[in-house]
Image (tube, rainbow, N blue to C red; front, side, top):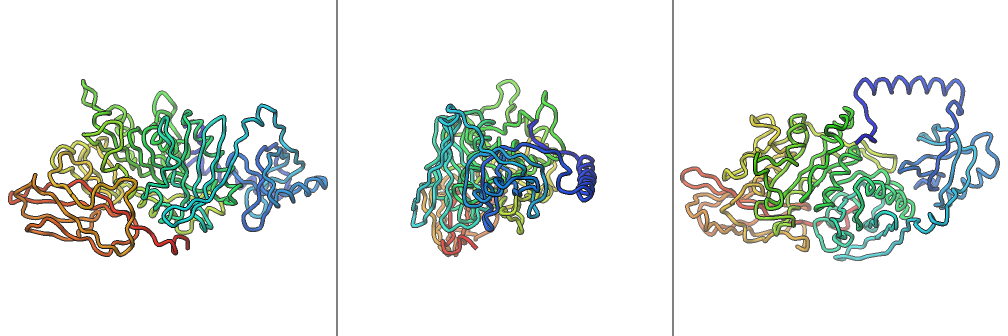
Length: 526
């Protein structure tokens, strides 16, 4: 965390004053007010006008020859505009070129590459893949020194607005998951996102840098320069969940939301004895809607204290500060995917976060976008101490009176209803149709009707069954058969649950089930 930039309000004000002074100085003395610097990066060209650029650590600089540059600089910049992607050393001064950050270039030389380095140069290959009548271009990035990544871009997607990141667990390979995982694939089409998956096991900090290097390289090869600016929605199992957590702390300004399965919020860098992060960085990290889903067999509480230390270390200090985090435990599972997959909570959570946090005027072709924040008081809160009570307690955030350090923040009532059904232990009602939504469960067409059938044998004295899609009540029955039909479903993630009531007023819930409704291919890109 200590390598992240940020500041409090006074620092921002100081920066504004400093920027104003620099601007005045620049106006007085011209382009060359700054000191000459050396930049090493990959040659590139802008998307529309093919202006020469240099990619340096994921940032693009527009290039312009200085008045004192010789003719070879202009000739080299012309090669950049025509598709040169080599690595170069550029000497010059920072300035504004074509209205954006740029370098006023004095000289350009090819970067020296040692024979050893040449043997480990990352490569990118591409292929066309068709899945379920949809076409994709797949870019495989291989770096012998770090990891392998796959970037999947739907065909005809003119602008990649963001990235669904699903990195691998230890010893695993997530690069093919999107081909059979309907809800990951549909996420791309719902939001005009690409997908990034991976193979290879290295520390998360190094994996993050390899991830950024991959985006830089693929942005050139794919002719999608906006990839380096695209924000992330991240999901993963075990080490893959750890990488999702790493994105939260290493790149919080680009992380829209995260779903972490069988891992933890890896916030060691934010906690003592490390120095506290700046106010700006902490605000960005806490504003990321996210959830950790643990298996009860793999993550039992401490035998002496009853505390889940790996969760309390994060929730106790940060939830009272407005952290938009949630946690729940599936008691019958260990370190594994559940039959009723954890994604049934994660995918609606990330879907809603993208719709809410992505600014309507956000344009990644112009640079990184500023994600919108969500007022914690506008959400809902679940009491983490009530999972075993028969019905997990959820209330609007402003009404919560319990211990925030042992609570979960949920963005709206829909997510709260899904969470309540999934987090409550020992549910007596079972939705038998549709069945648990595994990754291979097909999506249905828009406008479909889906029958919902319930086994209420463990709640035999029920007097009323209420059927829900998120928090939207679909209907109520007061007599058998225990079934209802959801009609005219719209594109997206629909998560059904049932609340049953008996004559004494006892209310119990079913486990939730998810149905994915595809977005028509013809409208996948505005």
